[in-house]
Image (cartoon, rainbow, N blue to C red; front, side, top):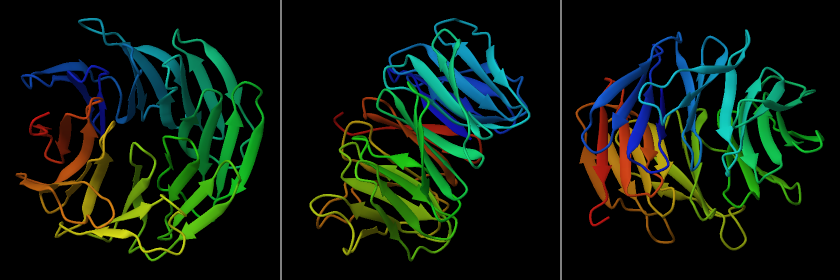
Length: 322
């Protein structure tokens, strides 16, 4: 249910719905059981340029593991009856944030609470950092921008139940896939909003390219990937790129962390590599797996791709010549 690469790309941590955590060596595929104390893993977040792994579980807890240790022991940061959501590190790795009910909690890398951001109108389901001092959060019908330094909060209408929250790398646009089959864009600098419709089912997958130009999306009822181009005047009034190579539902998509490649995986056992752009809608490569894929994760250097399958297998692919 969750994947997290180490900053050097040599280790992948895999979290299972049954609660087990494994540390997998990318070089030889060997797996070490780290922990099985949670009733179920929800999310993983590895500290950028650091050694700490944050794990959110179905027991309502958020734990830290020092991955520099041979046998890391869990340090509990927080536990409550509500499931934590949106566990994320600030880009410099010095602060960790997550949502707990209607609150956002912020901790430093030493495990000390920095601030509790309270007063959100709805329980929060998604969270991400925007620069050094802001957090963007989403819940049923609402999008929030919180200032960590001052505690100030701004609320926006979302017009639906968010399935995703994706923030462009340049911090300008927050995109939410909604349960009603629409995609909501909020331009955070000028507060303008836009809404794209026509999806077949809930918009359950969204992701920005590293250069913040393209937003890839997919819905629960579709085998195609819809890519919106934010170059020039933006996507309003324009036709998106339709990427079609899957024969069944798209289960996962992931952009290269520092590059232009997009990977998608489907229920049809296909792993597809794309390089979307004007006039470029055909796949670069298609690999056939031995079963459906559930999750994708690129290594930080963009040279390797991890594919987690619903069978419990994890496979690694390398870009040719990388």
